[in-house]
Length: 131
Image (tube, rainbow, N blue to C red; front, side):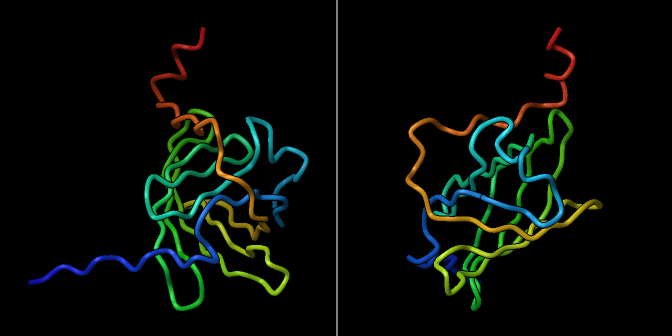
């Protein structure tokens, strides 16, 4: 059975996006561990906001981009889903859901690729090494 290659991320979504607001969480804490960002390139994509560091798997849809993510909230393993579509204002309007937890809408603006890599999500074992 032939396997299909995933559709590339459309140009208008491709790249890095700066998350500027959420509907359910305190926006003043978005950048607590660094600028709140999400990337949609189709290769090694990342998400950072609040105390969440995650790897993102994204795919093009007929209405935008959908994604799953997996990482850590502080040191606790967490995962979820999300989707975005491009608004008439040129910003991404999206929704992010934590598995068995909260969900929120968010808005993101295009930004330049990051010079410094977003750190990998810490493992739960790292929690006990912080002493």
